[in-house]
Length: 256
Image 1: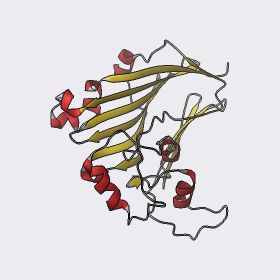
Image 2: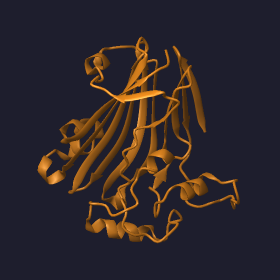
Image 3: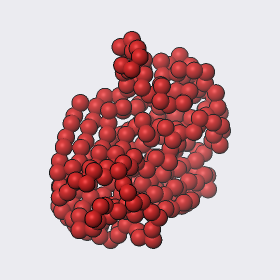
């Protein structure tokens, strides 16, 4: 396990990176003493999990007042819907059959969101004020050259959709002398069918007493987008080319 802790202004940033979730319980868990595998199978109402889940990967940003923003795989997967999903293609059935013998299956596999799509924008604790706002993230300021004091990236979960595309959720943070910027991204590409990106951008300037959370949803049918394959495989390049479905900005105020 790789543990780090860094302090910047009034904030403490904790970063943890570790191995993937095992495919079965190895501790013969009983009662309240549960291993990571048993915690996930108990907490999540999904027929099975993504191929790669990183249960101990987490990013936590804590203000001296106690306000906290955390990112972890369990909370992200809790927002995956256990119901019929609109992406219906032939590979989904073969993909489900390929998982029947996997240790990650804990009940009969039926129709559910096999792309593990999540609208997770982070876990927010101890914030007294959180409201919709017309304030947006200053993209021009983010593009200004500043010294990077800290940069980290974590994968929370990932699945190759039985070799028919990719689905992953990741988070990355960049700390500059002026503030910090976080990008939480769920990315989905089902080859020949659909491409989707759910982003949460979290930005804070140390001179301000608030944090801006900008969440967006983008989705499009691949046949309608006419995007080159090389670009399609690069989430950073392709995101701006996907039609915007929804955009919301929130202002989280720190105690004065």
